[in-house]
Amino acid sequence: MSRDDGLKHSDLHARDRAIALTRDDPEISDAEGQLSYWLSKLVTAEDQRLAAEIVSGHRLIRIGISLLGVLFGWLAIMGLFQYDGQNRVNLVYLLVVLVGLQLSLTGLTLIAMLPQSIARCLPGFSSFQQLLRWFSPGRLQKLFSRFMPASEHESILQLLGRQQKIYAGIGKWQVFGWAQLFGVVFNMAALLSVFVLIASRDIAFGWSSTLDIDPIAILAVTNVLSWPWHVWLPIAVPDLQLIEASHYFRLQNTAGEVSPEVLGHWWPFVMLCLVFYGLLPRLLLLLFCKTQLRSAYVYTLQHFPGRQELLTRLNSAVIETRASEHERNIDTLIAETDILKPQRISEALILINWAGFEFENTQLLNEFLTIGQLTMKTMFRAGINCSLKDDEQVITEIGKLDALAPIGIILKAWEPPLGELADFIADLRKTGSPQRMIYLLPLAIKSQAMVEVENYDLQEWQRFTRQLADPWITAQALMSGDTG
Image 1 (cartoon, rainbow, N blue to C red):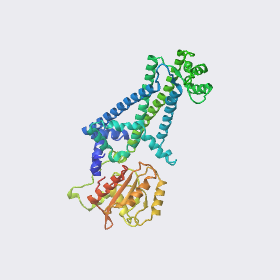
Image 2 (cartoon, rainbow, N blue to C red):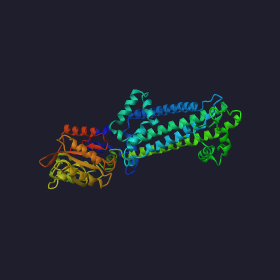
Image 3 (cartoon, rainbow, N blue to C red):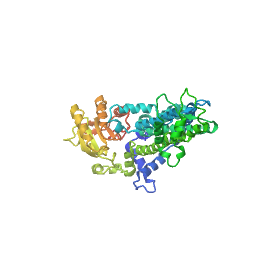
Image 4 (tube, rainbow, N blue to C red):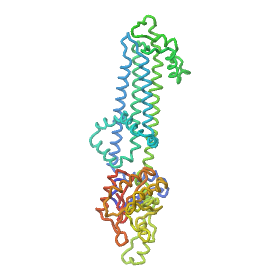
C-alpha cells in the first residue's frame, strides 16, 4: 500500500478490480479473504525477503532473551543458596526474593499493561507506566537487534517509518511477551538450579532475623503460601515443629541439637513456592500476551489506513465513460456526468470547510462531490473567517457523532499549510477513535469551478501530512486522482 501512494485513483481502481475478478468467487464479500488474495497477487520477492528477515530477527531476540534468562536464573540461585556446610540457607531471604520480589514485579507488570483509557484518568499514571515499561526485560530486544545484519535492521526501520503508530499495539504486546519469556526462562532455570543443588549437596535450611518474630507468625505465613498445594501435597507444608527446629541465631550454635536431615525438609516448600509464585504467574502472563498480540494483529489489519478504500476498489465495478471521437458530442458529455461512479471513499464524510469556500449558494458543492466521488454526512465551517471558539465548537459537535466516521478537511491547494491547521487536527484527533481517517482535500478553484491541483501544491500538502506523523491522515487531490 505504501508503494501505491504515487499511483492515481483510477489506475488503482482498475488494477484492484481486475485482481478481484480473477477470484473464483469475486462477488463474495469476505473482506479478509479478499485482502489475502489481493496481497498474494501483489507481493514481491523483496516483500518475502523482508518478511523472512523480520522472522529471523524476532527469532534472534527470543533466543538472546532466553539465554539471558537462563544466566540470571542460575546466578540468582547460586547467590541465594550460598552454603559452606556450616551456615544455613536463610529462608526469610529466600522467600523475600523468590516470592515477595517476584510477586511485586508481576504486580508492576500488570500495572504497566493497563490500557491508556485507564491511565489517562489518573494524573501522572501514564508517566509511571512509561517508567515501568522502560525497565521491562522486553526492552533487551534493542540490544539483540544490534546483532542483526545491517540490511535486516534497516529494512525493519524502513518498514515502520511513518507507520510506526499503526504497529504500536503490536509492538507493545511483543515487548511484554518477550519480558514474560525472560521471566519464564528465569524461573525454569532457577528451579533446575535448585534441584541440582539439593540433589548434589546436603543443604540445611533455617530462618533467622534480628526482629523478634514468633514461630507462630512464620507458621501463618507458610500456611498462606502453601494453600495452593496443602490438600494434594501436605508433605510440602511446613509444620510448627519444623519451623521451631529451623530457628537459629548467628551467635548460637544449635547444629548439634537438630538433625541435619530435618533441616533439609524445607526443599519441597521452597521449590513449590518458586513454581506457584514465580513460574506460574509468568506462564499465565506469557499466554495472555500471546493472546493480546494475536488480537493486536487482527485489530491492526482491521484498522489499517486505506483498508476500506481498497475493499471499495475491489468490489466496485470500473465504468468506462470515454467515447470515440466521432461519438463525442454534447449529449455524450451530458450522459457521462449522470453515470454513477464508484465511491472513492466508501463511507459518507464529515466535511469541514477550512478554506472558506462559498458552497451554500453555488453549484460548487455538487461539483466537488461528483468529481471527488464522495458522499457527505454533514458539513461544518472552521478555520478561515472563524474564531477559535467556533473551531472548538466544531470539534465538540464532531465528538458527538460516529467515532469512526471519516473526516474530510477542505483546503485551498495554493495556500501553504499553517500551524493553526496542525493544532486544529491535533485537537480533532482527541475526539473519536485514534484510527479515524482524516482526509486533507486541497482544492483549486477558478471562476467558481474546480480545476486540477498543481503537482507542487499537492507535494507541499503531502509533506505536511508526513510531518504530522499520523498514518490515518492522508492528502488527496480529487481533480487529478493522485493520493498521498
